[in-house]
Length: 75
Image 1 (tube, rainbow, N blue to C red):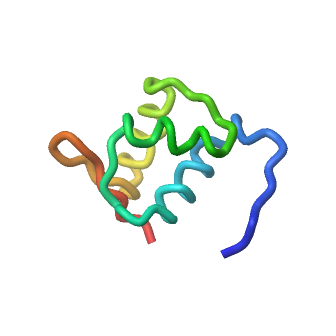
Image 2: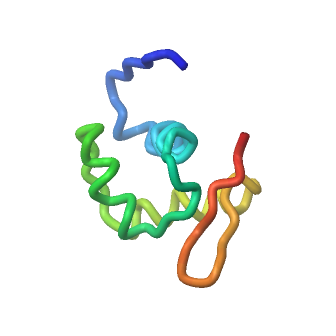
């Protein structure tokens, strides 16, 4: 793994979110779980904005939607 420095991380929520999900110990999550977790990257997104990015990951098969939660299935 390497450290990536991004000047405008707000414009790259998808990239940050994918890498965060990849590095989590648990592959299961909810949007409520993720809001405080992504704050450590100095990102402040609403649940609606985060949901939009998760929907994109669901559409491309990186995240699987379950009952009441999601599962990260990316490599």
